[in-house]
Length: 349
Image (cartoon, rainbow, N blue to C red; front, top):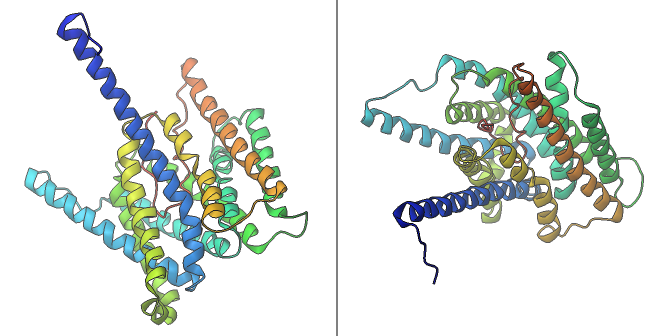
């Protein structure tokens, strides 16, 4: 039995310290769970697209997400009315941001989902993580000064990793799915950079922005999916389970869980834990999807994870450096959103 001496003040400090450690571990666990859910989304999307056309899967994912998000917005507005602090459903700033972001997010999901349907879940999760190093390159296009040489070295490691992942059992013409995932990484990087430019320093509420984007995506995919909607009605329970998992867990739950967690930790720690997503994608693809990594693809996976972590740490340190010289740093980039179909809430430094 441990006896604390020093009176109530020392005991109170001990309880506060234990409480902080417990809260920190809980927050870390939630962020790791979000990364795991996002990593699993690639195998779920692959399974769903093997039973239904890609555009039908996207419509169902967006529609279910939109209904869930609208329910959350309605519940939030009800609480605001009870407190006498009612606000507009969507502000003008939120509408201005959501319209272009809803279109670009839909474009990302189209390319990404077609890519997942034509490659392995492990490759999809690893190649899309190239977004992490592409986003700062696109974002810096409009800012004076360049990134340090170490960042370009990290980007080079990621490019080499993509080549190894595409090689499979040996060097050959890349598969269509891998090329589509490479294109999705580029489009997603542009989308994330656009999120930063349209939302930084503006009164935009993450839940309202997410909801508007899911509504836009639903409207965009409905005409394209309409001819095949009878197939959705006839889908079996297993397919519907995958669709509901993609919509409610990979999108809505992941958004809410991350929103809760990032308010209780630092941007660096959140990025580190959420950055494990490609690792989970590979692990789940191998363990549950029966996929296999050849020596070349295993080396590519290792280099991709190493390169993205390296590039992310270099870019973060580069942004923090102007603080020491008294020069205001550029606004932080949103963490690239990989697995789920919703924008990420901002991470506090």
